[in-house]
Amino acid sequence: MIDERRKIMRVLSGEALTPPPLWLMRQAGRYLPEYRETRAKAGSFLDLCYTPDHAVEVTLQPIRRYGFDAAILFSDILVIPDALKRNVRFTEGHGPEMDPIDEAGILALKPEGVIAHLEPVMETVRRLRWELPAETTLLGFCGAPWTVATYMIAGHGTPDQAPARLFAYRYPKAFEHLLMLLAEISADYLVAQIDAGADAVQIFDSWAGVLGEKEFEAFAARPVAKMIASVKARRPQARIIAFAKGAGYQLKTYRQKTGADAIGLDWSVPLAFARELQKEGPVQGNLDPMRVVAGGRALEEGIDEILQQLAHGPLIFNLGHGITPQADPANVTALVERVRGWRN
Ligand code: CP3
Image (cartoon, rainbow, N blue to C red; front, side, top):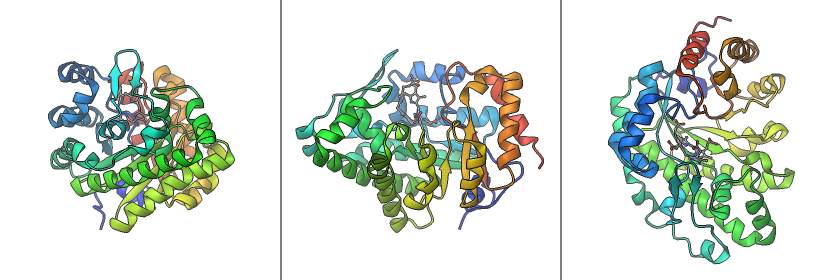
């Protein structure tokens, strides 16, 4: 049974609501002065993720300020490689780094103890469900196997994931082993978040857009399908949003192939295509985060176009990717007011 007060849960079950409920990817982050303050107190970024007091606080900050319809657990997709002992670190101005993995390293990975290592995250989820307003949906999340694998193989972020694409062609067996291991661990991790109190979960495949047709099928869609089947077999009530950034035309069959309840859309997805996708179920997105930085007419026009095209069907209003540190918090206030003021 879903809690009818949680609008996002209703949309995830296929209802169309006017105005549509909203939250923003990366809504807890550096654009907020209160986040920067807690971040400074916490020490390292991973300490922030693993200290429930701090992680709960930064998750709640955007809810207090804007009253979004969902809170997303504050953590990171790279806690999985961290739990796999890949020496993950976040250094100022460098983005995430870890020890790059090779074939032998992949075969030596041990899934035992991963969920135990992530227990502070589950504690954060339990406390959040207790502290959040009843109408706020609590979202858990994890990275998709392909996106997490790209960081594990390169050891850092890259613009086109060339190291992981190359590795997949050169060492197909080891690569497949890595994807399947990540799918299994990530499914267990999502089940643990759901058991701790997450209402729904989102799977982030932020680098799906760099894959060719066959590779999208094998490295993006298939492992996510495996994860969703595993979570739903154990927790049939679970609602799952799958966000394959940059997947373009491949989104046409992505929902059906993965079994996701809703699909996330980045801002490059044409709204006419988004309407087609929405005929088959709920969609989430897809405002260009740069419109939130620009503010004014650019922000208003972007919001209105999405609402005109998609607000008649099941829609969770969101950005097409995470909000950036340059965004002015006042522009987010304007965004929330405009979406909430919408009438079809
Ligand atoms: O508010 C939320 O959305 C919840 C928290 C969240 C973070 N990361 C916090 C974070 C979520 C859902 C993520 C997901 C994530 N992390 C993704 C998938 C979504 C996406 O944006 O594509 C990816 C690829 C990562 C990996 C990652 N973490 C990178 C590449 C970076 C560095 C980039 C940056 O913005 O600095 C991070 C760090 C990170 N994760 C920050 C935050 C708020 C900034 C770190 C800081 O505060 O110093």
